[in-house]
Image (tube, rainbow over all chains, first blue to last red):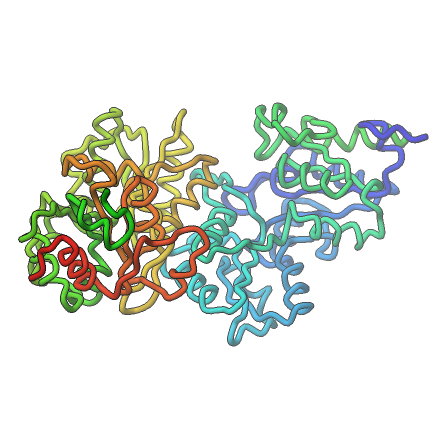
Length: 274
Length: 274
């Protein structure tokens, strides 16, 4: 019988899902910087018999522009391997016949270019940064309050993130604001939504216990993956904080120094030492 | 024994507390307009043996400027009779030795002129309207997240209000946003906080059962007053909606057409017909 605890579980794995920001690279001015060892770690995973996908809550750019940035940093990544919330939200819109009012970053607008936005019957918010003005938030609110059955989609539910010039409020904060204003509950598209992780597993044709998630966000990456039945490993890079290892409810299956170390352990266990 | 239900309770009353916007006047361009009969109703209360105070969640102007507006509309009101949240918050700051970072309307800044705001150890938010920018909200967030024991005061907790050019998000929405961002619970100063109603009762030297609150907001005026042991009467003016009369948890002691009608009933019961 296979060992179900880390690192024994590595032997029975068929796929690995990686978070991007904080695991492969740190964001900042320009394209940001690759985390030491991560370019080589991605290469080693690709050369192994494991399937590999990238699951991110990034919503400030289209998938194409975002992947181009990662390629410039040196990563061997293609668009079809990357799962951000915006394309997932477009599938939901189609399924349910919804036309969105958008409160998103300018860089994401192109992703929704082909989507019918006339006479909106739902609102989508994402990390809109400077676009989270009083005027724009009032506008989104008025659309919602004017609907018989208001529907709010939030692409992620993060509280805040760090940029070179300081901490910035993330989309979850504005989700809570609109939830209170309209007395409703938003539908989250992105991590830690189980539907979002499931869509990545479906793309690989794997069951949850056959896959492992590696991320720097204990609640959204590790906790979200575990809720789906996957293993969740946290790296001590990106937004990792030492207090994560004493979290009252989410306990990572393993905490490792960085992606390179995680990949080293996984491949060693599988008898594929480099 | 005195009849404790409306209108019998009017006989044993010693004081009346009135909400302002939606009860005395409707806001809008310039000073807004007095609600028919309300100027005369205030005059009749003042000529009676009842004590009279005004309790409001207005925070877009100093108490002096706000009262001057009411006087221009024709109301016989003086500054010492009006209780808005900002002066109450200044008392709290003094008591607890706190220095605030302010996220408020420009019109309210003067109220805090004499308050020490250096090296802030708490944040005060009020209905800041256009000042609720992404930049200003980030700034308030960074002050809070940088404190060992973050304290957030919210002057009111309204969801939204109506102006001539449409619905506008109120302070409660941004309170919820910062609560989520910093994982804390704000302290509300203003209606429906029991402490706020108590401060008005203390000023009159009355016990809760000796006073009656009249307002247009079922939850914040009527419900808040009832939680303190006062009677609460709702007027069918201002933000009143017919659905208020079917509210699942808050039931007004009486619902009357307007302030003039409420005053007519109170004074009739007390044998003081005009």
